[in-house]
Image: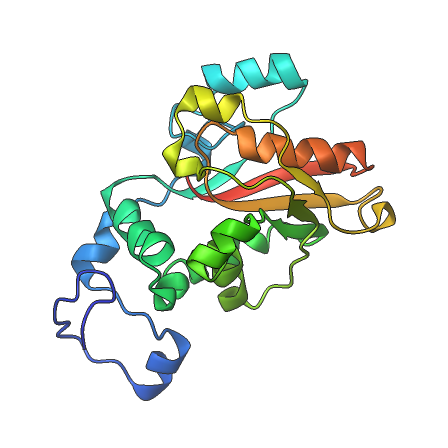
Length: 222
C-alpha cells in the first residue's frame, strides 16, 4: 500500500473495512505535515494563527464592511497542506478529496442550523479542472449542501493574482436561488483557502443583501 500523497510504501496494514471507510491513506510523515489549527489561538475574524486576537486585516474589514466573517480554518497553509492542495486541486487527483473529510465533517456538525454553501467556480475553471474542489470534499463527508451562489465573471484564477488584484476584484457572484431560500437563514460559506478574504466577503455581501440573517465561513486552510 502506498501513501496517496508522497507514494511511499506504508508498512501498516488496514482491514478491508478500514480501507473502504478511508480509501485515501497517508503515511505517518505526510499526516504529521498537516497542522490542525487550535481555534482558541487563531484570529476570530479570519482564522489566522495568532494569540486569539482580531488581526490587523480583520480590523480593516471590520472598519470597511462593518463585520467580520468569523472564519474557522481547519489547517495551517503550510508545506503539508500545499502538497495536498497541489496534488488534489491543481493536478486533479480526485482520490485525495477524502484526506480532510474527517476534520471537515466534525467541524460542520457545529453548524446544525446553517445552510452549507460552497464557493462556486467559474464555468471556465470548472471546465479546466473537471470538478469543484470544495464540493468534492463535502460529498465525502455525506453532509448536505446548497449551491446558493453562481459565479458570473470568468477570468484569471485567484491563485494567479496578487493581493492588491484580489482586493480590487469586482463582485463576481450572483444569487443562484430564489431570495426566499435564504431570507432569515444562517449560511456557512465553505472555501478551500482564506487568503485576503475578498472572495468570501463578496459572497457574504450578496447573501446579506438578499436577506440572510447570519453569514459565517469555514475554510480548509488559512
